[in-house]
Length: 248
Image 1 (cartoon, helix red, strand yellow):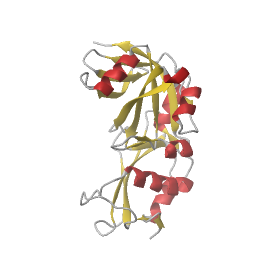
Image 2 (cartoon, rainbow, N blue to C red):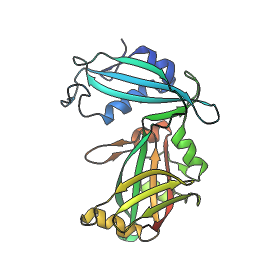
Image 3 (cartoon, rainbow, N blue to C red):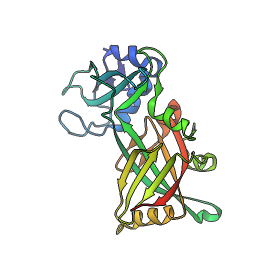
Image 4 (tube, rainbow, N blue to C red):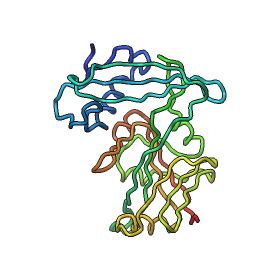
């Protein structure tokens, strides 16, 4: 039973993740704060285990695809495991999770930039098991003008982010509903509270006409913020400015 950074895992995972196995385990561990079995805090240095559900399927063009749905537990609560199943059709059971923030740039930080960050869960990749894997989300966004970011620094991201193509739009309704569309498809949505000072600041900044979207695989959302280091290191972090319009 191999162990990576106090996380025991099923050795069969390496046949699917290859050289990214260790990074994948570290990333899943970093995003977990409670045991998926007993729901108690994981605790620093505790012996942990990783379970992974893999679903094999194909996209509309028949290209093989895989989704990885992982959970971290106390080793005493759950032994490591890996289960593989076949999708009955084209896999569509993906959902998005995300966060928003406001960054400042310009002389003395005089300009507020609204940021919408999101990822899709579970993680979906294209490719044959054991071969080179391509993130479905990253590939889609790159096709629509997003740019790869190899840095997790917000300062560098702001300096280098480009404008995505006009196939990407962000609508902001008066009631605080925010929706991101790519090529006509709803990719992510959030409901902001117009009475909350932080949300109000975000909505005001979005009124300037653009939102910086940060996306990709391996983004970690926590109660205290957003962690981008793993995504930048693994080459799955993409950014782009998207036009913001008033919605209904």
